[in-house]
Image (cartoon, rainbow, N blue to C red):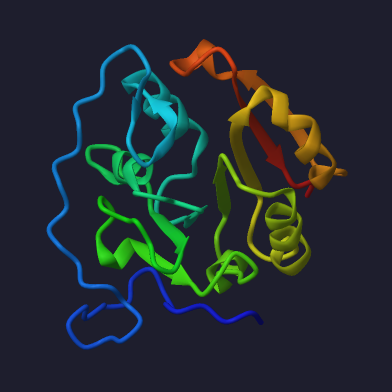
Length: 196
């Protein structure tokens, strides 16, 4: 198993004593989302209220765990975590993490881009938003694709999908243009479901 810095999404984190957890400052308030997609700093995906609603409809309800791999500032994940329709989501990012929005209990670190978060073994759904490299997706699938994961949601530029599509050979994949659900016209949402 590849090491990670954190261990569990519900583990108590003490940012003052842990040498591997950066000090946590209070999260800024979440920006209010509108009907039109808006690009925010630290989030490659333009966000809108309809897009968040659509993603929530795709993701399993708690207690099923959703692992967001490459969560960046954590803005998308914090909106998915927010009431009233909270998703049980855990974001993982490379150390040092730029996370600003996810609480410590919902955020973890890996040492570098070649390290995998072991929680992938237990997560029902993985979320990849603008992943930096195809190898990251294929490495997670090779290491943890026979675990609890039943669905992978990939979101990124439509032009990039052809590079990632082969990662999901043997999975049932549904694709939709993000602009149909509150995103930008050049973005694609691909939902891959593992066969039973």
